[in-house]
Length: 484
Ligand code: GDP
Image: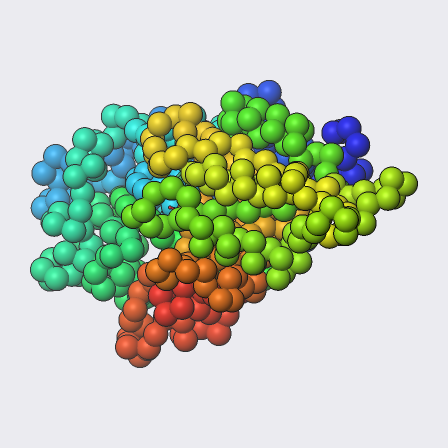
């Protein structure tokens, strides 16, 4: 237990309601089992039995088809060397794969890997992960007795970096060139599901296209959006999704807790910080400040927005003059710890000073902490990414959370924690938006830039209107959808 923490009193459920399998070696990845639940309250979202059984069958499939198996050898044997024309005559074995390529920041990566994994789960593919970046410094292996890392000698490895819309095996490009049909599919396809992808590429989400894509043994994804909500548009995938996730908004929450177990090094960073600064507090508040602006550095209107949101929503007390201070020595003062994360240290510094220089109107003691202030994004630098992961994770352990609009870093933090965030609207120009923030209706992340078209009969219908449980995102009207 953690000294003095009330969180340790509930008996912890090591396997998170059956999400996790027992039998992994514990010391090599201490975050995997009971350790996590010591720091987190039990989740109100329970995985369905169907999800649990589906994950167990997925693990068997991955073991049978994963790297080093006969099936993998068979599937890669003819890949890459002029195989395309005669591909129909060549054996590819019994397994199909979805390769995830690491692009964009860590928040984007966590969301897209989850999306590709769910797609693999639904279509009986095996997910393999590009390890050319630092993914194995961040996360333990999630599947027992096998590996999710794409072997370095994968035949297409050297070419993947160059895949883009101009590539002849890019799905949208093949559609444009009438180069693909149900009777003629290639042995691999590149799927481009980025914020600025063409409508052709987003046809990936349509059922007719899925019948073609389904025949292709190797799919290589480059994506930077959480595309799970758009999978629900497909009438073929939808019934299965409803069975897997009766609580629709909990898709990422469950899958992320299943997939992402920080390595011992990152877990050390998380737990040391937690014990030093958060464990003893009566209440914790997370504030994630992400500024999408060409102008680097501290911005006064963002600070104003943070204060106005946290005070309006009663997340933080106001400060008062010393004379008005309510404190009387005998009262048991509440301690509230505020965890701020930002590339810039100044927001937390100002908040900290504010609550030091003056007493709070409620008499609560407010302590403010910020683990790192990295100044600028340095994706793929190991220690930088490890800090980013540790901070997303620490935010997910807070009781209440304020996050910045359209930040995938913030989406991961609140959804992993099962928290409905207060979303800070993105400022237009240099003034604080009014109202400053809005409470989210759901814990699931937003799919930014979803397909703008429907499929077949729904063609031309805005995606946010196709299925009833997919809605526009509060922080991204007209260009973002989410499950709730
Ligand atoms: P997004 O750009 O907000 O959607 O989030 P991403 O995580 O995809 O990319 C932003 C990257 O910038 C992060 O992965 C970090 O590398 C860095 N970064 C942004 N905000 C923070 C922060 O609060 N703390 C740390 N440690 N890194 C941050």
